Length: 220
Image 1 (spheres, helix red, strand yellow):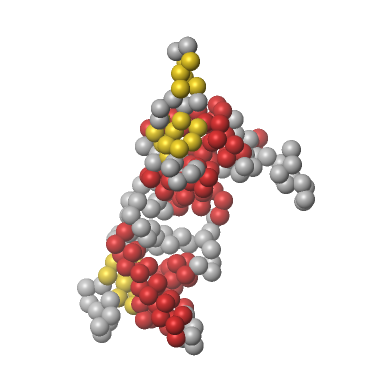
Image 2: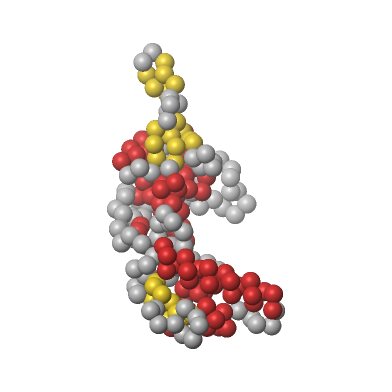
C-alpha cells in the first residue's frame, strides 16, 4: 500500500467523490453533469470550479478529455472519462468527505478492529470471535470471507498486514504492522485508502447549501 497522502483542493475532492458515485460504468461525462452531480451533494458548485477540478484531475490521470464537438473553432460539450484510478480515488475521497468512519457492522470493519486490538490473528481465531457458531452454514461462509479479507490485506497492503513466518499449528497467522485507524486496509488492486485524503480541506461555508426543511428535499 502506498503511503502517499494526496493534497487536492476541496473542490477537486468534491468532484472526485461525486464522479465515483454517479458517473456511469463507461466513465463518460461532461462538465454540466459534473456540476449537477456535485450540487446533489449539497454543495454550491459552478462551472468554474468544475473546470478547475477537471484540470487538476487530468494532471493526476484521474480524468481524461475525450472527443469534443466544435463550432466556429470553439469547443463545446467537451466530454471526459473518469479513469479506474480516478474512480478509486473518488471512492476514498467520498469516504473522507461524507462518512468520517466506516460501517461498524461491516465484516471488514469488525475484523480490522479485532486485528488492531489483538495485533495477531488466525482465520479461526477471528471467526470464533466475530461469528456465531450456532449456524453452521453461515459460520462457514463468514469464516471463508474472513480468510479472504486477511489474505487480501496481506497482498494489497503488505506494509500494513503481513503473514507471520511461523504458523500457528497448521494455520497462517496475520500480523498487524501499521495501524491505519478506523478504516480497513485496501482489499483490491488499485484501491485508495481514505487516509490518502486526510489533508482534504472541508468545503468552505459559503459553498455549503443550506439544509432543506423536512419534507422539502428535492424542491427548488
